[in-house]
Image (tube, rainbow, N blue to C red; front, side, top):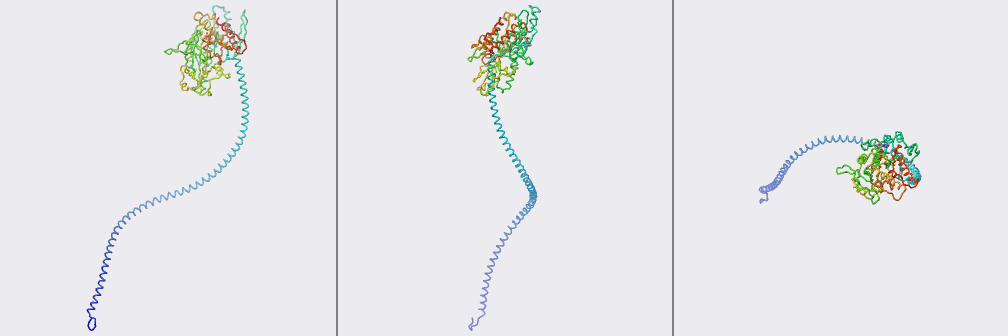
Length: 566
Ligand SMILES: Nc1ncnc2c1ncn2[C@@H]1O[C@H](COP(=O)(O)OP(=O)(O)OP(=O)(O)O)[C@@H](O)[C@H]1O
């Protein structure tokens, strides 16, 4: 400031400068701030640039993805269109289904109603039927009661009949006699040298006639001789077990059927001509075929009793050839007759059986006599042993029973030969050739039944048969054994305490079949012509007495068969 108190210029300048400097500093500070801001903005710009670069990549990738998405969208759209179409179709189907279900439901309801109606009707019907059933049951009960009453009455009647039957059987006994008269044959009328023509004609006349099934008439009117006009009654001609009669009267024919001159072969071709042995065997196998398989089996033995010796006609030598081997007959502990070592062959059918019998027959002794050119010199005994097995005693069903007689041949035949042995133990192993099944069923019950078919040798009048030497000896044995048989039958008929079975090998061998519970049929064979009148009358007389003794009509006496040995 100047001394007058005025403001100098410099001061003002200075003031101005200071102001300007102030302003400058402010400006500089502002610049610094702006620069800082600028730097920061650069930085941001750089950052933004970086970001922008990255974003561009992302945009490219996003574009790529976007393209892909668009493609996907396009394909999805077509799929969606398809799906949509399918959905539309499904909707239509669903709609159809729905209406079908509705229809079905309506049908079902309708059917349910129908069924218910039917069930109700059926229930009503059942109720009605139940009521009817109850009425019927009441009636059935009443009927059953009356049936029971009838059954009781039937059983009582049956019992009465059985008692009657048994007493009849008791009256008739176990021996039946039938008679068969053979026809006149050429050799009956053949002329002998020692008689005149006239006498020969007389001798060849038929004097024995069967007037009916049960009656034999012997009518003979010889001048100077007693008039014979006699009838003999016999049981019906049905079956027999034992053919008895004089030589040449037809025993072998009856038992075996016709045989050719040189060949003894049995034939089962001509049914009408069959003998009892093939018929009986066929019947046995027919009956067996009706039983369960394996429940029955048959063994066969064939023996001949020749000169009071027993020969096994099925025994084989080392080469398998059959030849008659001598055997003996013994009585077992149980009182049965037995032939130790006897050959038993198992057979499956009648043909096999007949083949065996044929073999045996080849060995049977024959010898021509004046009466019969093919006279059998031995007794033939064919035995069928039938073994029956059952799983228990209750289920046992024997091949035949002898409870009641029947008119049928089979029943009648089988009623004739029951000799049954009920075993709790095995009997079979004591015999040869047991079937395989048998061994595996040890605990089974077995019943053995014997069917013995016998062709006896013929009784013979030595004067007529003209035998000498060996044949005469044979005749003597034949007549003696027939006499022993007659004694046994007489003793049985008269119910004697001792039956002389052991007096001859024949009766000893047949012991099981002609005593005890067994039934024996004697088939009398008779020659029709006058020449054998005495022999025929003797046979018929024997048969009649045996039958009458059985019926209790005659007093005890010895049958006169022993006279045949004269
Ligand atoms: N009913 C019959 N029909 C036809 N011929 C028969 C009849 N009976 C027997 N014959 C015949 O009579 C003859 C003697 O019969 P067969 O051989 O059976 O007698 P047999 O009694 O057995 O004799 P033998 O005891 O001597 O052996 C034989 O030629 C036989 O063919």
